[in-house]
Structures are given as C-alpha cells and as structure tokens.
Image (cartoon, rainbow, N blue to C red; front, side, top):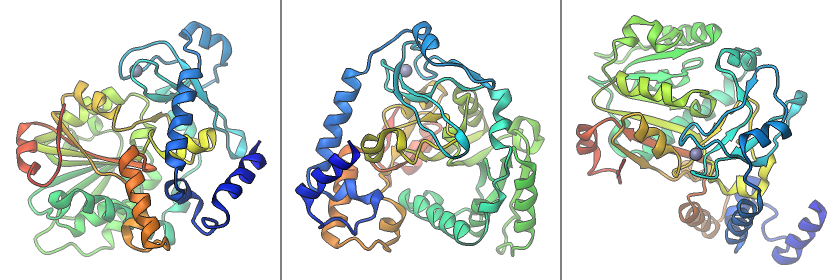
Length: 365
Ligand SMILES: [Zn+2]
C-alpha cells in the first residue's frame, strides 16, 4: 500500500519535491492539500459513530486510564480514528467527538496517575541545540502576536509548565516580572539555577520558578497576572476546563493567555494519520481553531486571536525552500488552517480586547 502510494506520487510529481523536507512536502506539492482534505472528509464520513458502551467493549482500559466523554460539549458518542504507537511499546487510541469535532485520547489518563507518564525526566533535552531551537520558537511565536510581548516592564507574567525555565529567561530579558510553575521538582531546580546565573535587566525583577500547582503557591494563587503562557502544555492537561477556569481567575483585568500546541487541523495529521508527529506519548487532547474557542468560552474568556504557524524554519527565514514553494506553503497553511502547530491568544475581558484590537484580528467568544 505504502509503496503503491509512493509510486503514484513519483508518477505525478517526479523528483521535483524530493529535496523538500518531509514535514513541508504536503504543503508544497500542487493539489495535495485538496486531496488530503477530501480524504479527511471521507474518513470522517465513513467512520462509524458508536455509543460509549460499545466503545468500552471494543477498546480495553489500561491500569492508569479512564474512559471519557467529550470534555468540551459532553457528547458521549465516539468515532474511533487513530491508534498511535511508539518506542518502548506505548500505544493509545484517539477518538473524534461526532458533535463538536474535538480529538482526544480515549481511554485517557486518570489525572492522579499523570505522574506515571513523566517517570523519566525531561532534563536531557534542556541544553544545547534543543534549548536554542526552543527559544527561537518562543521568539517567533511572540513576534506573531505583534506588540503583545514586546515590552514586559510593569507587567506580571506566569509561565504554566515552565520546565527548566527556557521561556522565563526570555520573559525576564524583556522586563516581565515573571514566575513559573511546574510539577517536576527537578525542572524547577534547574530553572532556578539557570535564572540565578543571568543578569537582571535594569529596573527588572529576577524570574523564579515554583514547584506545584498555582493554588499551592500563595504568591501565584493571589493572581493579578497580565500574561499567562502555555508553551506546549495544553495537550497534556487531563482536566482543561478546571485549569482554564483557574487561569481566568489568575488573570488581572486586561489580561491575556497565550497558547502554543499541536494543531488538530494540521495537514500533516490529515496526511499521516496515526503516524502524525503530534501524537506523542504524553499528549492527551488535540485542539484546533474550531474547538479551542469552546474551551475558552466555557471558562469565561471573551475573545481569541489565532496566528497561523508556518513552521520554525520558514518563520525564521532559514528554510531552504525556493521562494515560490515557500509562498505556496504559506498559502496552503492559511487556506486550510493547517499548520502543524496552533498558536492562540485568549483575551480575559473587554479591556483586553480593547487594548490589542488595533493590532490583532480578535474573534469574540
Ligand atoms: Zn464534543
């Protein structure tokens, strides 16, 4: 099957796109976006909608897991779509909510057993090229939201899931009074060691990381944040409604919440299905610009802006794509809302919308 498909592509496209990196190819080959979109619609139409009881009979429950209904709309029926697998034998099922289109892992991980997923520390990823690429990504995402992240002085920022402090470092550089929280004690220790070694800008405050949930740390629980950031955290949250209700309460009037996560409308997901790079071992839920607004509306946010994601090398200007292909990639990302990552800025209230509406296209919720 795979080799037949490869032969077909060879016939249609020749060798013209062989040098285009794998993650960009589906965006630049003429006609491929339309084909993938049509395949996706067909897949949705053909996949049976079954009750949760039927689903329980078909898909076994792991020791740390629980069956879920759709967290966003309450729908209990399921469309069984994907079965990602990976190294060391992990495997899970991803379903689509037939009512609102939300994609989520089902069975999901019980919140009290989340720690089991993170038994191996992330710390090996936090230095060298990885750190530099991450920080480049943070800068590019901030840039896509115009002036919102340019000037931090006089503004409080909370980085939720701050890891080893790579973003806190940038926030401190820009003058934010920045705090982070994380559930990994090792990461928090690393973050504070990193931050201690950095110069604090004139008139600025030293960023600091805390171990635990916001509610457990008095100075975080007191709220009053102008900015909250979720860098590749959203897909890991097993109870997003509770968390977002909490974030809304932590924001000051005029506050914003920034989200970067894998995009459930990615053209790469439509092309590669269970092998999609967004289906990583620890991801639990997969959002898009169609489903995120529901989460935000239900938790009290008043507006949202999206910035299409073209990929780090394209945005940084380091891609080797020819200009014509680059333009095609950008057009296809915009047309299908199909970048591999989704970035969004949520606005707490009318004051926040009024503050940034001249710079961003804000959809009211
Ligand atoms: Zn739903």
